[in-house]
Image (tube, rainbow, N blue to C red; front, side):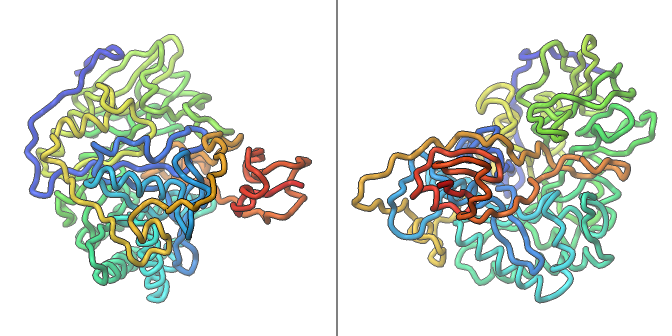
Length: 514
């Protein structure tokens, strides 16, 4: 049965929740690169309704050491409430703002996700040796402590088989065994700390990728596992389809078996405790153009919420859906929402309040651990009837959410404002006027959605979960100025910035053009 829902006509469904003892988690990923074109910052998330905020992504090196990817976004950017004249060594950027938010929302945890679609190419190598695993564990935990975080999330896409093919992610037959050893090494480092950090993993929902997983051994080391139950279909396929359906279609013309239900049950049967399993919810849709509807041929998509070159085509922020002219539908049999515009001939698969309500019932029925969203910036306005993140909170109820105290005690952090548990101490010098920090660059490293279980016939330009690695410019190199003079310049984005020469030279990624 298909139920027709006109745009803006559906209110959030509130249901009584029967939470497990630990409560339901509402995990939300924050994209590091969202501060650019999207102008979406860490403090724009609805911290009051989120239990865990996953910062995407930290970058592992070949030896197992871990660092931030974009240092300007992560630790250097000054916001309007940051001073240029603080004493000591302090963290700014998204992590600095996140630390301030932790003080306001003491029951929301903030952590670092390491890897992602684009940054998973080193895992197999360093995880294959004890030295590499030890290096990764020590480095990632120290980074967690330096930044004042509560947990580490590992997003290795994927052990043994699958993942990015441009360039191909290296694999080893014993990746899964090494993955478990890697998690144990992190746990060993956790045991040395005075507080109890959490450990989670982002995992695939496609059988081709998870058939190699030792569910019981992996889940034994985790507080929860975020299963990426989306991207079942997309522009890489041969026909339109649902990309986040709860149940499979027994009458599917191609016999496709992808569904959230199948993935959940396979993990449970494999030995992962149900209350550790967190169901992934997409805050974005995938569109197909030039089509007559579901299971039909289509033409390559040309539009999306954040198109940059070939990236982002066919991917829409949930908050922009349904598009004007389209009608929203809900397939009760499959637990799948979609919209269709017969005039424009555009079919779009996405989550809706109706389909999410069915998934939340499912989570309660099977005693699952909660929900995970990719990504927070694409959701509808917090508190509105269309906000999916709000719907989770309202449905389960505040008392049934897995809220627990975050940590503010980091005596070994290299940053004064994290180590001292307070904001930086301003110097006696009058603050330098802070230029606007929200001006987006002309070319952002945007990647609208993660790939979870992309079919083997997917093209090499599938969406990624982290931006391509930029080269680090030499600050004093005049040949990087592209003809600009007497201005602060960002070679990576070819953008001029309103910084003084003194302030410009504080950032390793910027150059002062004399």
